Every structure is written in C-alpha cells, then in structure tokens.
Length: 215
View 1 (tube, rainbow, N blue to C red):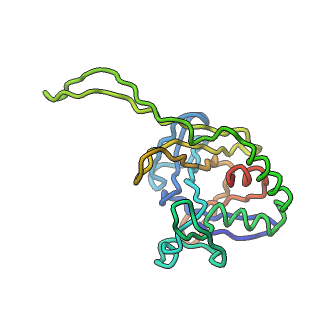
View 2 (cartoon, rainbow, N blue to C red):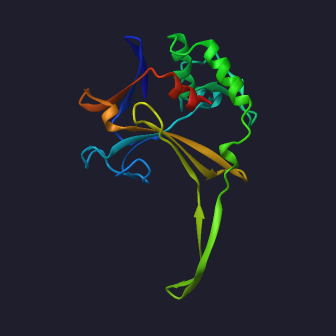
View 3 (spheres, one colour):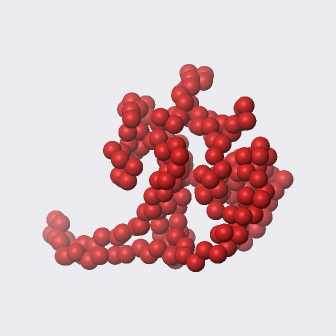
C-alpha cells in the first residue's frame, strides 16, 4: 500500500491482488460471510469488496529488519506487550489527517474523553462452544462441537464502507482478541493501471470513520 496526499485528500494506492492483510472477497449482502477469490481469474463485480485487516502499530524490529515500512519513525512508544513500536497504517493515516486538519486536536480530545467513560468493551464478548453429538468417520469416533466466534458489523457509515470486528483466539496466549477489518465496496474504489498492473485507490477525508477505527 502507498499513501500519498493529493488535492487535500489522503489517497491509498492498493494493488488489486490478494496480498497479506488485503483480501478481495465477494458477498451478496453486507452481513454475509465473504468468500475470497483470485483477482487474476475472476472478474470484479458489484458483490466485490476489499477486506483490509488494518494495523495500528508495528514493532521497531520489524521495520529495521525490512519486513514493514512506516514513515513515522520519529515517533515510538511501548506497547501493552512491552515491545517498542512505531505508529503504522491507520496511525499514519490518522496523523496525516490531523496535519491536513481533517481532524482537529480538540475533536481528538473530546473523543478521548468520551471513550474514557465507556463501560462496555468488544473484547468482553466470549467465544462459545456448542456440543452437538458423537459422529463416526471412517470408523473413527469424534465428538462434534461448533465454536462461535462473535463478529460485529458497524454499517452506519456515509459511504457504504463498514468496520467489522471479529473475536478470535489469541495466537500465542490464552484469551481472546478483537481483529479489526475495514471493508470497502468496489464502487468506492477507483481502478488504475500502473506499469501493467491494476491498482485501486481510496480517497479518505472523513473524520468519524478514521476516529472510530482509531479508538
């Protein structure tokens, strides 16, 4: 992804391929479970959307090792896991939005104070397990269960983009963690051809969308 400033807009240039945290999917409505597809073999249509597993920060080591890139290397902080980190992806966009005065310092302070009064949090949602029955497959007995991973859809946006938060098991620890996805319908993206490779761009200049993702 490349982030550039043009005519008072923040433009995100995204390759039109499934790459890392960017996945192109199709679904019939905004609450369906999207199915990933090959962008080289299957054409885009009105059911197509981009799912971006958006990040907030990156360990300094990942940047020094060349695994990740961020322009805000002059800023760093200690994360909740004790690692020293740089702002990354959404944090970079948010920083640029403040520089361009899409978002004022006062608005950030007001939002911070509002959030300070919140009593309920998404990561309190639990993963539940439902027991079904015993089944036998090829002579081997199994206990069949279903694991429910809660997913919350925030669809009240002005441009038909939406934020999805999926509760997942922590990979290297016990407990759960919310994974944040920013979903963009194809009609909100502009298609370009650069060096014979298709790219998509997204113009961002909405305060509330950035603020809700950020906090």
